[in-house]
Amino acid sequence: MATTATIRNGIDVDRLLDTIHGIQADPAQGSFTFKASSTWRDGTHNTGQILGFTHAGQPDTSRSGNFTLEGDEPPVLLGNNAGPNAVELLLQALGFCYAVGYAANAAAQGIELSSLEFEVEGDIDVRRFLGVDGPRAGFTAIRAHARVSSPNGTPEQLRSLCQYVQDTSPVRDSLANPVPVETTLEIA
Image (tube, rainbow, N blue to C red; front, side, top):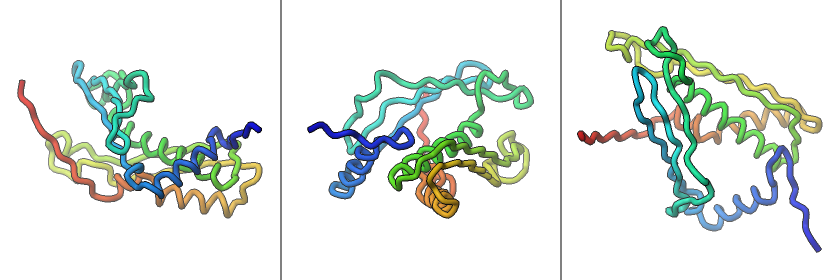
């Protein structure tokens, strides 16, 4: 007798639960190393590549190639708008992470989503980046606004899920807590 997968919010719930149980049984399965590269093109324009990743110490082979992103600055910051700038991509990464976490966790809890949107904005002062005395170079505040509709989730469930997603988001955790960053330089 064939079994039918439970798909909710586009998430295969059985596969999600198998993944969770697999990581609980072997915590090494929860270990990933993600990679990206950036190549300067001209002015403030860069081309980024999202490269393969490793899972539990092994290279992943599920992707047929790299993902390509274009990054640039707006004209006020000497760019040509060939793509979003790096801090906009950082905000988008938080929105992506929140949406993935919300959809997957809602699916696991039996909550169906009709729509889900995140708007993320951040305040930054570029003086330090430009070599002028000023506050820290990074964001001084980031605000996210979620909008969700569900045919079967109660307001209490949806609020609780929103808090859970914030508490477990890898991107939010990386923004809110110090992470060691090591940079090396190779001179060609």
